[in-house]
Image (cartoon, rainbow, N blue to C red; front, top):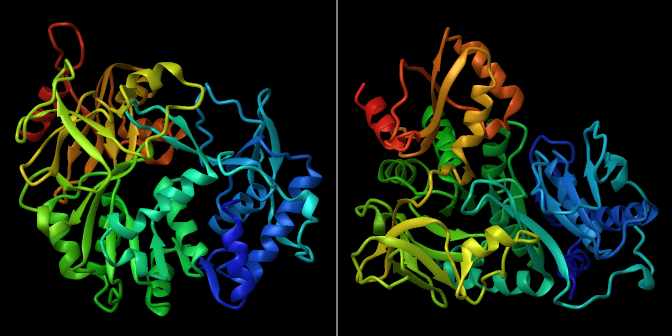
Length: 482
């Protein structure tokens, strides 16, 4: 069964009901009846462009509702879609076309298709039966990008069957409230795997999926107006929402529950969110490669630094040493995960697949330990990859951009925890003359928005190890002590 079929069924059952809302944006609120027309109209555009089943199409469209309509319309044709806002694609991934709302001067590479809102216009007539994709459940339908264990984008392919199976887990791995919610808000983009699955989960059941609007005010007003029940967010975006609520006493948070994922939730942020926004705050740890691994009410694990939740049913988490030997509860080591929902590897990437997937297990690159009652505690990373609110990046990538700026002789990127326990990207540079404004502008030109450093420091010397590598631990300690 195609993952779009249950959505089209809901479109028939209740056409006037709200399906998707992104307040203040071009489409604002789209009903199921209108979404059905969008899907069929986009499918017809796809056919006219010669897009076929089995082709891989990357989507880089800013408007979330239009983006979702393109995904569903092309999936109806059997096209394999992936969402990539910055088009930072794995070099191993061969893409047949890129659908974008922004003209891109690309000299060579995949076909560029310019999309606009006219794609949604038309009579909304369904495709002829012979035009509809009628493949197998194990045919691929969606590719999701993950920075995973290395900080570089890697592609994970999902079939229709895999997505159906992963969504059944929502009924027992995220607490009791999410499965019954009919109005859910995600502050994470549609390219994020959990947001994509939540969108399917809502639309399959006739619920309403909410996305960030054109401003914090319009978003919060919509959450209140529609009495949205649940929210999915990372610690960084959750902290931004919290700041808004704390600054605006007139706004009352009506959320019934919040799911926090992507990075560790600090005790201070947890306590403030539960006091001002919603008492039912859940911490979730997982990975696109294996789905949900651990979950717990935030207050239940708040007193254990690094605790991310209880290991969920059906998943085996082991802590091992460098030789792969299992370690007892309480011993720190390398985290490895075995799950019936493991993917087999990264699409077209043998080297990273061989490193992360071994002996039937997935190695996320985290270090940690298990408590006697199976609470998973994460203490750090095996590598130097930085986790910025769920987005992982190699510090070397940031450093390369810094070193390309005139006058800089040394550069180091690192994370510093703010008072809310969220890792903020900081950089230290050694240069002939330090011009923070010019350096920041340089980074903004060469890095995606989420990877532009928040803090710039000028130093006389960056600490190094005996082997000549940046000693990030000493660097962070030195900055903290200043």
